[in-house]
Length: 124
Image (cartoon, rainbow, N blue to C red; front, side, top):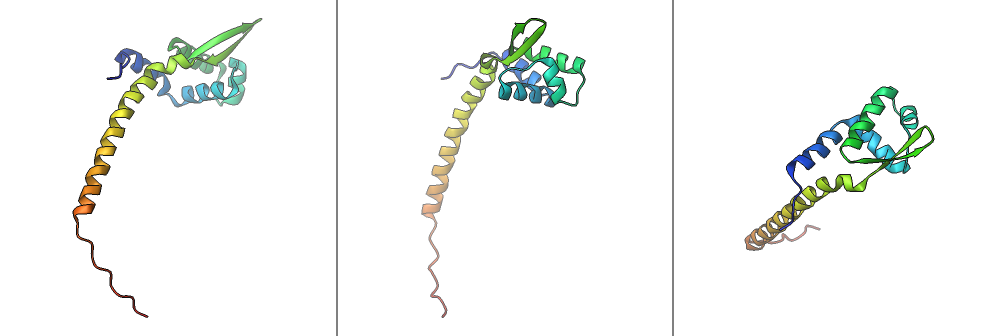
């Protein structure tokens, strides 16, 4: 059986990523590799303080890391931050794959048990 992360870890990641603006910020950082709050503000129709709050929430959830360069802070994605969610989805992914495989087997057996209608001769 797979080891699933504690529910609190999963809940934190899900709660943080439930916000559409936060997901957009996370995706933009993931695609770019690194972005500053200023760059994120330019890319989004959101104020700089709001972007800073979203970045802080992502960072506190362990989803972002940072690299300082003078006065600028470059944010990057932390793959380990997604681990609780990935583990949880992996656990249930295996569960659903097994269920769908069983369903396919049952449907095939049902299909094999049903008599096939005889083909009608074609009209010419």
